[in-house]
Length: 457
Ligand SMILES: [Zn+2]
Ligand SMILES: [Zn+2]
Image (cartoon, rainbow, N blue to C red):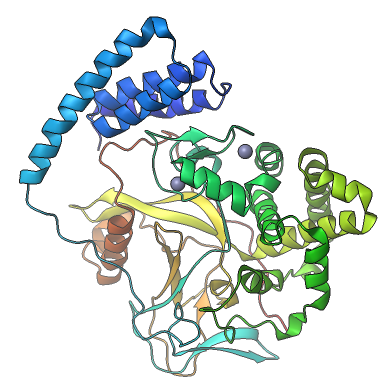
């Protein structure tokens, strides 16, 4: 539990970051927001972040009339930082952090999946994953990298929109939309190159009007277009030549895979269109129409689409396809927050993502594997019930990756081997700073509607 005064300072950090997104680039308001954030960092003994904010304030035309105050604060921060570094050097080195690894060797062509897993297909289950050896509880059998990931709205002022790291003290806004914030100029640049240039003008409305999964579908579309460097004709030719029935993420050589190869595995994910009711389908068409109109009007794709009805149709089809596939193949990103001494933890959501390999698993309410999200964005698939040789792995789509214990259950679950193991990994992996800011809002898990996926042919 954080001290009250620290909690208030953390709330102040989040509010100053929020105020940044309402200011113009190089404006006095922007520089004052950075300068004010530097004061809070100083009070939280975060000297490096204090100095970073002072630098950002100066780069944003901090007014000369206040320069003396900023200089004084900088001197205090530098002196305190030097003292703190000296003390740190004298402390014992901390134990190295545990790194999660596969419990068995990976496939030669697919190092992120244990070599005992195979993709099979039959009439009853469609495409599904089985194990060729008996698996025990706690085995890690997949470490999948997301094709696309998005941040939950209430985490925008706490985490970087690109790498999802918690960096509330030094976030900087995208100058285009000021909706997304990044931990560094490097993340801002990578995000822009990998997708944001085709979503910047649309992002704010996509999330606020359409919601979480359409916003993730928008990013998947923008990522696909970025892979082809905005060349819609090249993208069209690629899709025309693609034999979807031959795309198989379990036989593809991931070590040599190009971004286009990885996209193929996402492009062919099931849409489950034929299983949807009229209302659901109508809603998805409406979402696709809204996103398409916004992308044409507010991104550099507009002139290309207006000049060519074929390209315009390609863009709509792509959006509509991703609205459907992301709906039934997106995973909710989460972590565990808790008191290590009491071994109690709480489930917290912070975003959504789409994983090519994890998406191959079928659903069961009595699942035998669960997902654990690592801070670098990867998803670990962990065995939670023994699985016999030649049996199928089942994920659970509609519940949290690892169910959080209810208050009355916590007493019984203390010391539970699996829960403790997963909690420890989640805590160590995320390693949130002691004084990190939270939004202060109540975060509740709201399960999606049951997703009638896999069983695909
Ligand atoms: Zn980042
Ligand atoms: Zn932007």
